[in-house]
Length: 386
Image (spheres, helix red, strand yellow):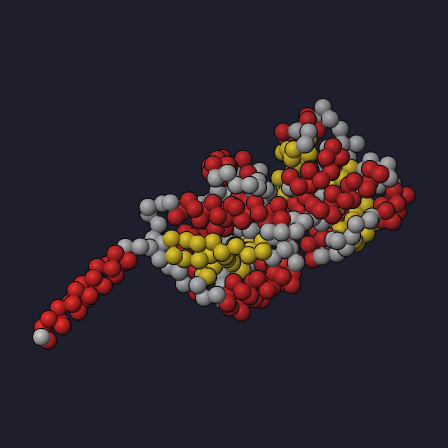
């Protein structure tokens, strides 16, 4: 009687063993967080970055050589520092998330660096350009794959002086992003004997710029420099037209977006902007990235920083494949990355986790598209900025 009772138990053990063996063949799922503005005025950049990170995850999951399966946990920081801190804390406190691809907006990235340091979550910034994000702290968890606004504004000042301009008025938003751009542009321009006739700080949510633009019109500058993001830039450029102002409009990387062109329509013609890194189609892996992105039928374009989000995600995955899904080991490996091949070119992090990107690309809007300056009719002399 006792033997008969034991027999089913043997079968149960065998069944459990078979189940466990089968389960052991399934790779472990590793979570990586993506954080960016998925709603709000600059959501185009965030959605393009999210899609690009998701593309990197999907391509790796399709590879038979991958040791793990990867899952992207996407969180919306709304380009607001307080929201950014909330979602950064949520991600960092989740022990199942081992690394992050974080932030398009500089003010948000600045507000979250201490959170990632406190929880020991290694992250790679994919879009925010304020230098202090990496250089303003000694947090070993913080890295950035894109460049900063320092070289961007040096190139911008030098280029505009070469085009024969000498007098500017400046409008910048009062976030760390806008103030930072003004700081570095003013320094670079002054060193090259350019003149700023007036400077106006504005709230990024401000709707009416009549007062500021009326004062600028009286100053009669040749160029209006705008340090801020696309939604504010759209409003300023549109209101310039209503006041009969035909000055050259010079923006920063924050307006390099299809959303800016869509927002101002024909008034976008001749607008200038500068961004670190080569155009996506000219990146070492740019064509592959664009083809793979288009094949996924995403609802939104990759936008200017999509390739950086892809490169950041892909680098994190490479590191996990090498050292395993351990936050400390991932952080330590990221801190010694040198000449790591990626679609944006070799990635080398300096002692502050900053990728050493020197190339700055000059853009002009021509016929409804952002065009590389060197390829434009403006550069050839067939069209004039003035």
